[in-house]
Length: 454
Ligand code: TRP
Figure: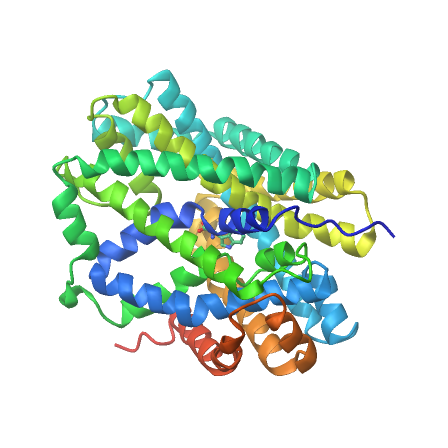
């Protein structure tokens, strides 16, 4: 039996896990949701969700991984018993990461395309209409979509194939500081803009009239998604930890980094948008239309634009690496395949499954024909399925298993080893047993429309 791979340093693990958490969600979802839901109030509720729901689940995922020294399927087999029904949650994790990466890579591909356009100066100084046309052209072009999707998957596979410490850890140590520097640079620039004041009011001012139950549920869902919980990615990274490492303080650091970066992204986006009197948009429209238009009117706009899209690529890449690691480690741990073969098979399959997403804007079958039947194209349908069903279910399984079923001695031992935060054991267990499951069930019922009575 080959020795199991481990992280070389604690910082390496933390940067890799933070890389998983910090992704497109931090940059295009958090800022918008904050502005929509009453600014400062939403931020406070979001912080509470991270503290009371996100942090306990993250601690549980790391703990399960480290205790089992195995990726999700093997971890559940080891800790629950080979034939136990809990193993389904391991499979669910592998399936979610597989499906999410297949469409995540398409959006990451768009970011690569825009980085390239910005480097050539091709989107500079255009108005809203022309920038929108560029986006629609890209979305409707099968070759560009599939091509960039392949390029991005190849980058992800190259990192994962190189191994846990020589690939994932090494690249996280390079890419995450690069991300902090790029974001920091943009933030300093944003602070000197006229729109900074109004933007701060939009993001941090208390606008109680815009806040309601919707805001609470969105904060909870976003905290979960943003911390990469519920699909075994953090569990898999935790499985490369050694026994001495302190789980809870790692979970605190990772959650804090993810949250700081989401807030910083909001402090970058809105000043740029408000300085040009534009309206904040949501999702792809925000980063691929509004931002290019606004940023290109600044001095050195094309340079700033290149930095912005490179930032998106880096954020997406470190998240993609962790998703591919879940599927790859299944073949390595359960089938004893060499890592290169495991990466090629897992990554190759994900690349193929991503093709319909890449064609959702151009090929009738995956686009309009599906829209006419289920109201969504393939790309949106996958996002809907994974975010609303698979992730909450996975998170619920992990919380319930850790709190109600995991062997008490294993749980207690792993929580306490190497930590100064042992006093939080009871609080953690309480949150995991009661608060987390109730919260997840609420978000789930809401997302499938069962709470929208009025
Ligand atoms: N956290 C990522 C983001 O903010 C998205 C994500 C959700 C993710 N689940 C994941 C990334 C699992 C990696 C692994 O964009």
